Length: 77
Image (cartoon, rainbow, N blue to C red):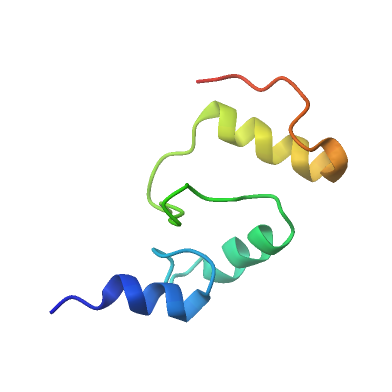
């Protein structure tokens, strides 16, 4: 029986694949609460996946101007 995904979501309450014991969980949860990161539509964050240029730029823009609301041009790659 595999309980990891349910445990992970319950542990952080934010993303299905971030357990409370993940070394970056506090930072990821903080950025989610501040609206800087949103994760993926399936409720995951994919912490071990390489970030794309578009994701990185989106984070920088959001950190610089939280009121942007996605109106700026962000690269698609």
